[in-house]
Image 1 (cartoon, rainbow, N blue to C red):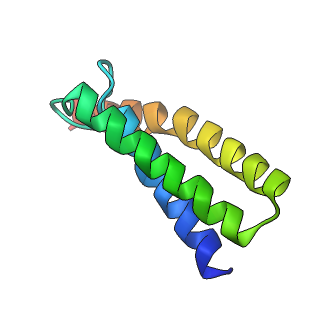
Image 2 (image 1 turned 180 degrees about the vertical axis):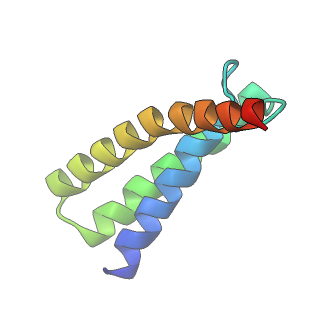
Length: 91
């Protein structure tokens, strides 16, 4: 895997996580992050991830990979939060 591709995916992961942790109904943490700074940081990280993917891939492929990765993460993060809370309730 090219380093720019791995960097792009990691930055997009950090961006999606930042946006999610700033959301009102997030369940991964006990308290949510402040919404505005989390969204700004998330947007900057997502933009950096897309830029890194542009460096590693052709533009259409980079946009496709970025959108697919972001959709996967934005669907997966709430389920991870729910799974974490379910695990805490059972203990």
